[in-house]
Amino acid sequence: MLLEVRHVTQYHYADPVRESVMEVWMQPKKTGRQRLVSFDLEVEPAAQLFSYADAFGNAVYHFDVPQPHETLRIVASAAVETEAAPALPDALDQGEWDRLRSDFVRGENFDFLAHGGFAVETDALRGFVAERGLDDLRRRDPLTAVRALSETIYDAFEYEAGVTHADSPIDLALGAGRGVCQDFAHVMIAICRSWGVPARYVSGYLFTDRQAGDRSDPDATHAWVEVFLPSLRWVGFDPTNNALAGERHIVAAVGRDYNDVPPSRGVYKGEADSQLAVGVSVRRARSALTEPEFIRMSQPSFARAGRRRPMSAPAHDQQQQQQQ
Figure (cartoon, rainbow, N blue to C red):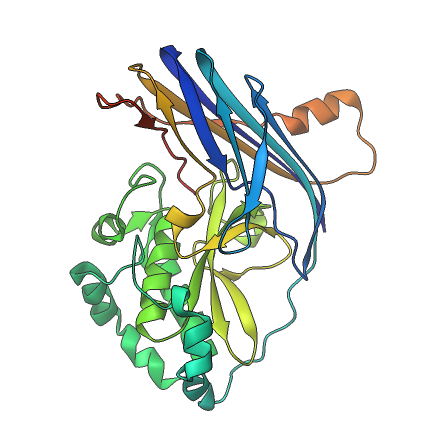
C-alpha cells in the first residue's frame, strides 16, 4: 500500500519569543515491511536542519531558530510503501515462556523489559490486572496471552480525547476508564513487561478505516505496541483499535515509552503564552490528481491544544502533542 503523510505542527506565541530549539521524530522508519519513498521537512522561520540516529535507530531532526518569532511551523511530508504483516500462527508452544526467560533474550531486550517513564507498575495498574484476571492469561502461550491482553484493553477503555494529555500518567486513564492510544499503549506495555515479555512503544501514523472499526483520531499521530516473541521477533498490536499492526500502520519511531519518541520536543526563550495546533492527514497515494484535489488532500484539519503559560526561567519547554 502506498500512503502519503502530511504532518503539520504549529506553535503560536502571544508575544515574540527570542529563540526556539526543537527535535522531531517524524521521518518514517525503513524496515523490512516499510519502504520510505520520500521525506521532506520544512521549517518556518527557515532554519538549518541537522539529523542523527538515536539509541533506538530512529531518525531525529533538530534545529535552532535564533531570531525573534511569533509562530513556529513544522511541516513533515512523506510517501511510504507498506506491506501486510505475515499471518501469525493461532498459538505458540508453552516453551516460548522459557525462551523469553533466557539470558540472551533478556539481555538483548533489557530496555524493553524495565519499567520506567509512563510504563510503570502502579497500584491502579495492579488493581486493573486483578479486576480483569489478566495474570490468568499467563497460563496460555505468550502469543495468545498478548492477543487477549490487547482485546481486554480495547474492551475496558472508552476512546475519548481530552481526558488525558501528553504528560498524563497511566493512572489517569485507568481511573477514568477512557483515554487515547498513548494511554492504552502504556498500559499494555507495563503489563507485558510485568509478564517478562519485552514490549516497546511505537510512534507513527494510521491510515484510518472507520468501516474496519477504527476509533482513533484520523487527524492525529498514532501509537501502538510491539512485543518481542523469540519465535516470531517483533509483533505489533494496536489496542486502541483491537487490531494487529498491518499495512495501514506507518512506523515513525520506536522507544521505551512516549518520552523517547515524541513527534516534537523543544524549548523556547521568552515570557509569552504559547498555543499548539497539530494537523495530520494520511491518504492513499493516487497516480494522478488534479490541482484542487491535491490541495484538498494536503490540508490536514487541526486539533488545537489549550494555552500554556511558561514558568519564569531562561528557557521553557514547548508543548508536546499527544498521540491519539
